[in-house]
Each structure stands twice: as structure tokens, then as C-alpha cells.
Image 1: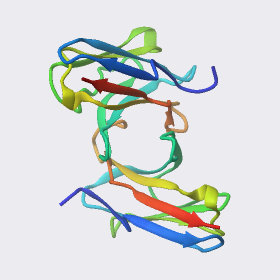
Image 2 (image 1 turned 180 degrees about the horizontal axis):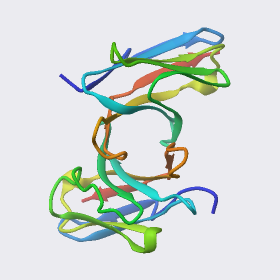
Image 3 (image 1 turned 60 degrees about the horizontal axis):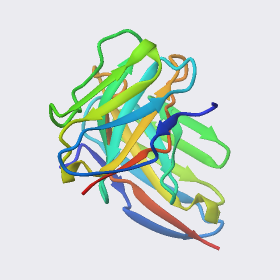
Image 4 (image 1 turned 90 degrees about the vertical axis):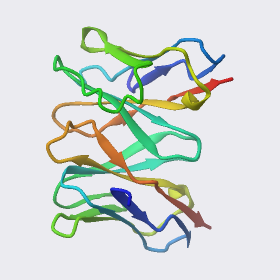
Length: 113
Length: 111
């Protein structure tokens, strides 16, 4: 596709369950970013991948959060033992090494009951 | 004190008015981004700049590195410009992705 694709668009889960959120970046984009936006709050950086370099994980809020990027393309954000405070919109973005402008996906709205 | 401050928080304008949204930051930066978040939630990156001025259509972004301040201007505003405008900065020396976001300015343009 032409844009950044995220799935699922909505996810409802029970407290304590694990969830996986997927991001397909724009083809050729070497940089991939995960952010989250809690209800009524601003955007918050989670993790950043750039090519084959070690990811910048400094924004992950706890060790329940992890992310991987396989083959330099698709990325999965995993949240283990979800808590109600994890409820938010999780946004993925990608950018090319030339322009640096980030292109955002539509996000995954996660609701933890 | 937040590292990225935006003003105003809310702004209502009449169609056709010239609009200015301000962003001040307190850290050394590698780049500053302006984003637009539509009422439906979708986010569009408007500008990334580290010096000077950029223009795209009716939008103009400026940055003053010495004063740690950026402005986003919208000329001849239109109701479709109604959105939340977000300023974000990348720490100097930090990774490209580790952005610090402002809380956003909610713009409403009335016909």
C-alpha cells in the first residue's frame, strides 16, 4: 500500500492478557517509530528503529512493553499482562533517510477492560 | 515546566483570518516538527525544520534557534484547517525518533 498500515484498528482486551499490534511501514522507509496517545493526553514516544541499528527503547514505559522489527520492515509492538492504564491509541510512523518527514498510520485503539 | 510549550491552547478564528500558533522549547534540539491531527485522529506531518523558514501552500513555519521558538502561520484560514496542531522537538544528540511533544493547539475556524 501507499501509506503506513496498522492492524488491528481497534482492540479490546481483558486486563492481564497479552496483545500484539502490527505496523507495516511505507516500502523503502528505513526508520520506524511507535508512539502512544492516551485519552486527553499528548503524544508520547515509545521506541524507534533505524535500519539495522540497535533500537532506541528509551520511551518504553515498563518491561511489559517490547517491540521488534523483522527484516527491516514490519514491526510488532507487544504488551504483556495489559493494565487499564495501557488503554490508548498506539501510533506507528515511518520515514525515509532522505526526507526525514514522518508518515503516520491511522493507529490502533487499545481498550483494556 | 514542560520542555515544549505551545500557545494558545485553544484558538477560534473566522474564515480568512491569519493565524499564528507558537511553540517554545527549553532543550537543545536537532529538529522541530509541526504535526496536524484531524478531528478523526489521523496525524499528518506538516514540517520538519532545524533553521529558517519553510512554506507549503498557505502554511508557513519559522524557527529561531537562539530564542528556542517556532511559529506556525496559516494564511487565509479555512474551516478545513480546523484541527489540533502539535509541535514536537528532537533532542540534540538524541535519536531521530525520540521526540518530545507539546500538548497541542486546538484550532477552530468558523465559516
